[in-house]
Length: 236
Image: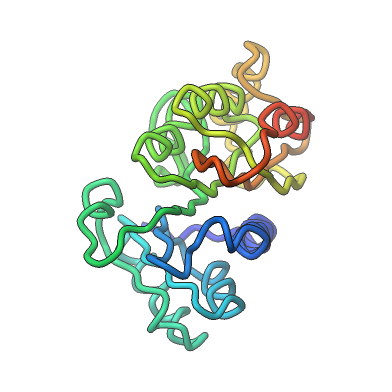
């Protein structure tokens, strides 16, 4: 099992999470109860966020043993082990059982590679047939606020409409263009992405795609309803 790493994507994800948590600090109230995280990866992006935002506590879950081991080392190196903890296990099995004040906000850069099945270069990155299975599952867990990456080729309209059906609005987002990497460039995956886009389930260019980190909320105190703007920003 390999630890996934993408410098451009990780930097955008970390910067976006930091911006959204800081901009909406008062409404999100993350200093009371902390923030949960689905999928830790190598933890460098969020460890830097924790170091930048005093008072932020993150409790993360990852199913990859090597990722957890590497993440804990990176967190310790940045001196935030007291505020950023990582547990080996399934987020959906364990997140609700954490002690203390329950978190109102969850963050995630979930696996979003779409493919017909898990038989791809890195199965851990498989997000289902349309790429948004984990994000849809996360939206159904009941958090008031979800900050997550949304890829342009992974049925973003289906994600936004499902979120709306669950009572969420898109408060704000930060979008960035990315080149296809080795995993999305795998022939089987690229052909599947091409087919999804042709069927109206996403957008991608010849050499790349868009990804946005969006804040979804069910909290009436948070202004903004930018779902359609998000979808326009993801069109390549």
